[in-house]
Image (tube, rainbow, N blue to C red; front, side):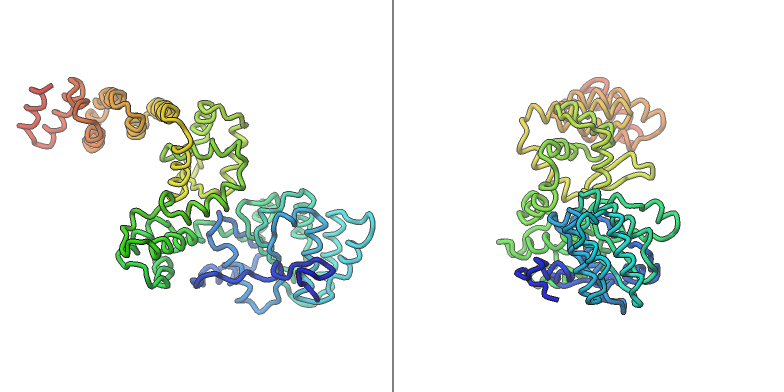
Amino acid sequence: MDTSPNSPSGIIATKLRPPRPYHAVIPRDHLVQHLRTAAPRLALISAPAGYGKTTLARLYVESVNVPCAWLSIDPNDSTLNAFLTYIIAACESAYPGMCGHSRAGLAAVGDLSAERMADRLIQDLADLDFSLVLVLDDYQFIEDLAVHQFVSRLIMRMPETLQLVITTRQDPPLPLARLRGHGQLLEIRSSQLRFTQTESEAFLRQFDALPQANLAELTHKADGWPVGLNLLAMSASTHVNPSPPANTLSAENAPMISDYFLEEVMQTIPESEQLLLTSLALPDRFTPEVCALLARELGVDVPVRDWFTRFSRSHLFLYSLDPNQNWYNFHQLFRTFLLNRFLRTREGEVIQHLYLRLTEWFVQREYIDEAIQYALAAGDSRRAAEIVEAYAYQAMATMDWIRLGRWLARLPDNELARPGVSTYAAYLQGFRHQRRAAIQTLEEA
């Protein structure tokens, strides 16, 4: 089959085979074996950009003794006609001439409906006496409802000889719950795709110019994100200083990481939503309510609840911090990128105002550590001291001296001299058996 870019069919050959890796590939034997053992009807590999979804799918199809039909999806495939054209080409790259029913349907005037075309492909697959693995890579580019309907029908009616593997940055609108309930869905997500410590160290060993002293810090900063680890390592290897401190390598000062986030993440987000997204980097953690607060203060006109639900499902380097999925935070490199982008584009008064609003939100819910942190970030040490003074007795009454000490340690000297605050500081010194210091603190108050 002629699949050159200039062929009459217009099929681009490189879309029908797995992309070649641009660096040494770390074996993911445990994940490949998981896929082989489960052998699900649908394997969904869903994670943010750069987590090795495509690599895992390629490693899997290379490990099984079954022909593979591969389609690398791009935005141009998000119409039923274009998608079907490439699906047929992908299947026939594995078994030439197998899609007679599908080709007839595609050529027939007035027969191009998702359900009928899915049934035709199902018939082609049923007529096939051999197994096939069909990989739909980068499915997040599909927006056409008709394509989703086609894939949904295919999944629910496909013969046992077909296995479908989908890689995506966000969960698609497919019958996942039904498949999950029937044990026919295997999900592999970012938590499983993250490099382990051993895998990270093995990956970094390919960079000969990388100072050994940086390995642990780079591994920590990447937090298992494969592309992040690669970009950090490349930045460290090419740094002018032959042995730069690893703690200087972040999304802020490693241009390759910032460029990656700009190209792979921010370009997929409408400009009207980017302001709200970047503002979420101000707090260390956030809830949908914090998101709504920031949206109101910034005058962002979006349906926040719906936006946050969609956003939390889009795998934008977002981690849930609790089983109830109330609290979230970002991957640290992505948060650094967002925070610097927000600070560069907003006036100081706006930033100060938002930190103060965060202060009051957190103190109202008695998250005192964070309330103090944001008051200080706003430059309002007086408000931070007021919060300490208001809650210090509660900490002391419950013998939570460590927490009280942490609060007091954050205050500047001029606020520690406040009569109310200094009294609690003296109590803490007394608890620590620092009698002379306690007396001096009280005398200076």
